[in-house]
Image (cartoon, rainbow, N blue to C red; front, side):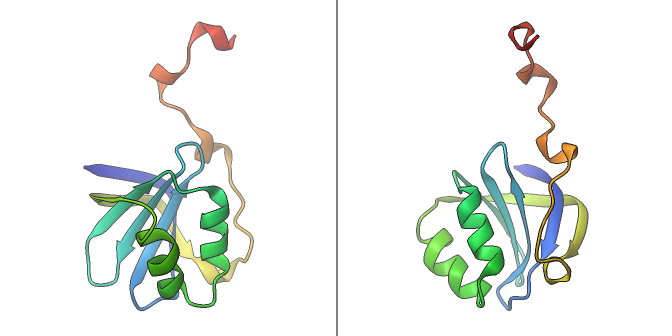
Length: 109
């Protein structure tokens, strides 16, 4: 499976290289330092926010994400990539909320 996230963040962790989050799908994408990527569905925005703020991202991931959500192996890519620690506040843009065309129906108008 190939999964693309609009934004990815380099994590200050020996076990996790990069991660991204899809707000609408509540999907977390993780690329590990040793290689390989996984997606975790059903991850709340609160868990994502707590992970970003944690002092040990590897430990938080193991205890709160890997142990609570089923991961699916995936080839993960990011449209943009930046260092997470450069900004303590991540601002979402309209690109983070783009829906596929088939998700839009006449009922919305």
